[in-house]
Length: 403
Ligand code: FEO
Image (cartoon, rainbow, N blue to C red; front, top):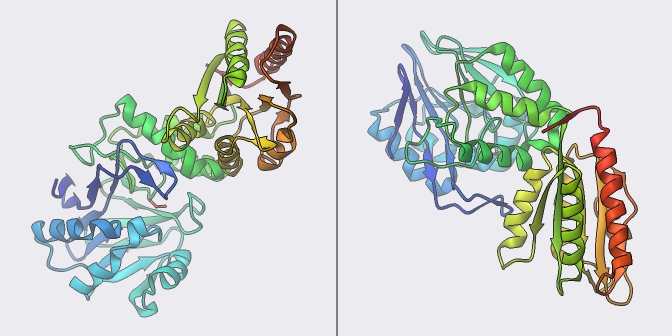
């Protein structure tokens, strides 16, 4: 789809990438993604907010040509990651008069990562304004949402907030940039929050409050549809960044010979009987499960009260797929409160030490692990029942608990 008009002399000129299946070589993107770039044509100056991933440079250039753009004064680079800055060089070649607008961190990183010439960069800081003629951009810094360099641009006259990666989603739709607020889209935004923003939850919480105060009528992120009703994404972010958790237990698991699966099934039933929601994520279902199910598991951690890792023992430690999920969870620093570990082993196991080490950053209460030699017997399953009871009691006693 070519460029899209989003307001008076305002256009989205970026690219959709519906067949992209993995982001950052890590994050499954079942809905693909978009690289949004916004063109603002003022009475005096023309500004382009961000560019696109290098793989889609030609789409951006075609869109600019189709929109009749023969002159660009400013390329406002809100973030240096290459999916937004990677086409700056090509844009500068076509529009050599353009100056790149950047905060201090974007400037530093653009010189480091893009080898951009220092004299092509105009420095801005918190609260600064860029006048385009009847259209004014005002800048707000949002460091660590999710790089140290991110900032937002508020188009004051139109009350549209260009929010960089904040409020983004890997969601490509045929109608390109306008929000449908579908459940799929909100789910994609939550998944995006989980893997991109959750490690910086306390920072992001403050930025959401700041955006509330700004009261934009439209939020235009750098990925996914524009939020034409900002309430949808703002209320989502307020829930996700808030301290409350859901009465939800997520169980990422691997069972090589079904002994661990018996324990997982028993735990899920017993937790459910006590009024908790449970999701079991089989990381070993097929060749894609490790990446796809770990992605779902990380999204669970946005508001799950507890995580219980369940693994067969392989060569003395956890199955590598469980170790991967544990490592990713550790990096994401979720607000999850409780931690459990269950599994079966053949003749010996070091799984507890290894999984605890892999998840050392999690601020959780660790419950006693339940590890069983071979196929669980009735007396072993009673330990699972006790774990379920203990976990349910602790979760249901939490002061900040939502459904
Ligand atoms: Fe979409 Fe952090 O780049």
